[in-house]
Image (cartoon, rainbow, N blue to C red):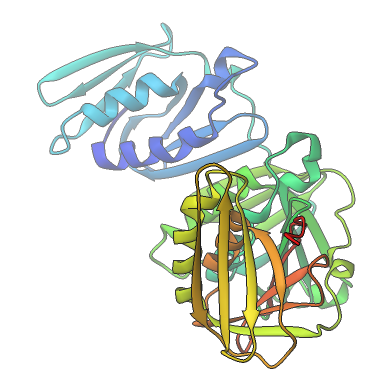
Length: 387
């Protein structure tokens, strides 16, 4: 292998693929990134793969001789990041010693790697389903739901986001058992002539949040409007666009029927300014965080006010009042303030509605004029009466 490439492009590529490098590898090669140089295409490809998540990217380079080798991710990243940005990097590997030489302005570094033959092959899907998805729609669906997935590995299926592709629509959902975020985006799927998803009733898959966070991060950095091609087969999903590939295993099991958790109608509803509500919650959260994160919400229909309070035992207490619009009976309900803030920050609307039936049944937060089909459900916290 012999090539010359840009320091900035190599550094960017390394920062990207290193997110898929195992932090506690089961085999030494999984702590490495794979470098593959192709003199036919004049491109350098980098791959990170921890057997669950794989990320591959490539960029233009001046390749004099093709070759492949794996290098320790952490060390390689640190060296390249420190090299001069105004000088190209030369990489040489003789194919025998498994040692490469990096040469940059005023410096030369040698690094021992491992054979590319030991690096596991990145899964590719050849015979499964494939379809194209609008990039911004996919990003929007992930941002609206990822935060609500569980971090408890004992509830492995809930540590992912459930994606449902039906007709041309994309419906995403995530829950940790205490809250549920659902977003339905119309016309997110852009079918090819040789694929008609309408012929199938639906297709759904649950993917780990860790993988989808990388997908969301990757797409968000794109400047173009490329479509994402999804390939799905036998427990594996591949996201492909431009010169980048992300592969992820799927989570086995039947995702909960979350639609049945959402009440059909509500007897109480409050219309709130989202930003003002968030600001008040963030101030109250300073006290709520000192105890159990619980805040109480009470309404006064005669003054059209909402009162938000927190009582941190042996520390202090506080309350806020904000204007609202409602014509139902007064509401008294309590929530984990962190759950509220997470969901409210994911809603893209100036005004939101808080809908509920009682202090012990699920409450739902909706954007005003909910054109995007976003629903955020939160289970209230039961608190003892002060009387």
